[in-house]
Image 1 (tube, rainbow, N blue to C red):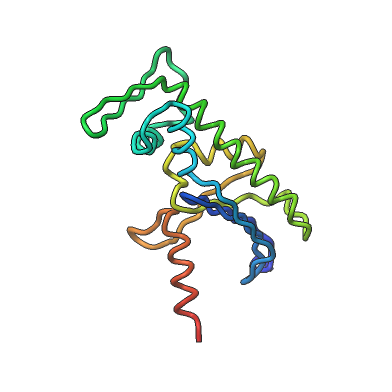
Image 2: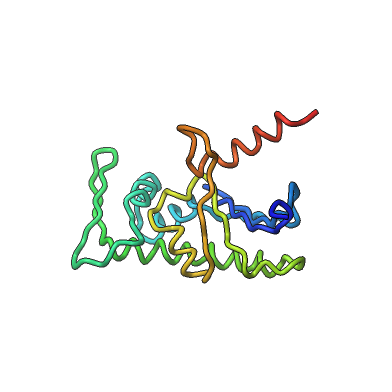
Length: 176
């Protein structure tokens, strides 16, 4: 019975993401969209007028769960040049982008016309789940749903970024 229950899987990638409704060993619905953590870096690049490499580094330092402290600064040094930004400003910009991801998830949810999955948690995986600390909590709060990280139960590979890889590998090994 448990295997035949419906589940929602969200793969948050670098350049694209995929929303899937899973039932048993099959996919009942799947929709991909070209929004990922890399787009957050592009957004920061344009909004703050900084190089892309700096944006990627700043994303790794942002913590969405952090309490606002007066004049807290996030620094980064790339190619001999220093960059400093208000932590509150960076959190605000990242939240704006993640809200866009949430809107895409909501749109995918509306496009799925099968069994009602409103009460189901969203299982999240992918390369970029842990890039920005607090992403899972922000998505959970914004979507008003439980969002849980899923990852393989393999020593040294128990990170969400390996979920897709090991799922594909498992599928390939089981082909006859």
